[in-house]
Image 1 (spheres, rainbow, N blue to C red):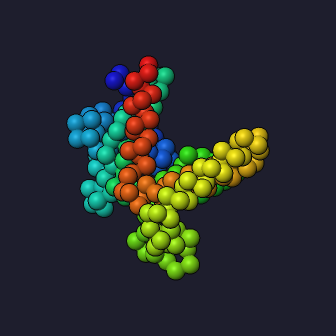
Image 2 (image 1 turned 90 degrees about the horizontal axis):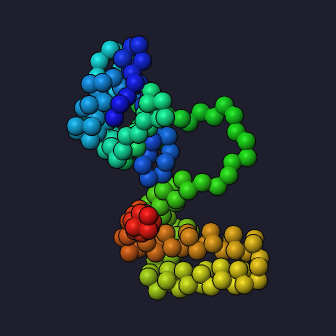
Length: 204
C-alpha cells in the first residue's frame, strides 16, 4: 500500500463497521501505527494531542478487528473496515457520529438489519411480556415457520396482483420473520450474506 502521509506524517482513517457499514469514528494514523494495525489485525492510531500511538480497546476492551484497509484514489486517506468488540466512542456510543446538524428525508438502509438482529436477540433473552417477538419465541419453531410461510405467500399474492405497496409491506414482514427464524436456529444473518457474497464472487 503506497500511502501518502501529510506534512505531519499522518493520514486520516475513517473507521467503518464491516457488517453494518456504519461510520464509527475518524482518527489519524502515522506510518508506525498503520504498520502495527496491519501486523496485529487490530486498529492502532496516532494521538495528535498526546503525540503517541494508541491501541483502540487497550484499556476498555473495545478492540476493533480489522477486515480490510483501503486507500482512496489519491492515496491520502484510508477506510478501515472493522468488526468492533464494543462501542467505538469514548462516550459509550456505537459511533462517534451521533449529533445531527442537518437531516433530509432519509431513505431506507441495510443498516437496519443489524439493529433488528440485535433487538431480536435481546427479545429472546429478556422475553418481555406483551412483545410480539416474545410471543413468537414462546410459541416455538412451528409458529415461526408458519409465519414465514404466510408472509412469503402474501408477497407472492401482492406480486401477482401487481400491488407494489402490498409487496413492500409484506416483504418487510417476511424479512422480519425470517430474522426471527434465523435467531431461533442460531444462524447469523452474516453467515447468509457470506453465502451470497461467495456465490457472487464465484460468478465473476
